[in-house]
Image 1 (tube, rainbow, N blue to C red):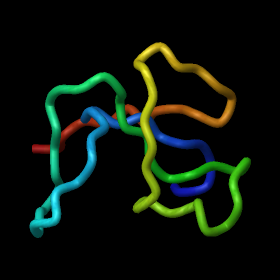
Image 2 (spheres, rainbow, N blue to C red):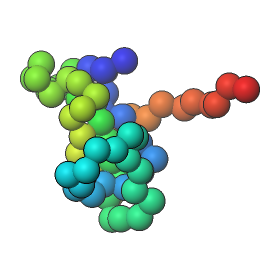
Image 3 (cartoon, rainbow, N blue to C red):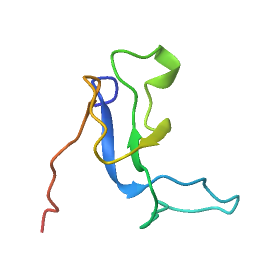
Length: 72
């Protein structure tokens, strides 16, 4: 799915700590995280490890979101 549009995520942007973590989640902040790069970026930016953040109301043609549901 990488490379289509940047994907807004449900956690808030902050710096990662130096300790090892699995799926770090930050529930508070000013900027929401978006990940993955888009067709607008260079090839080294089109990967899930790339992340950035912006305000919740930020809109642009290279930014989207994915609707998903947990399967039982």
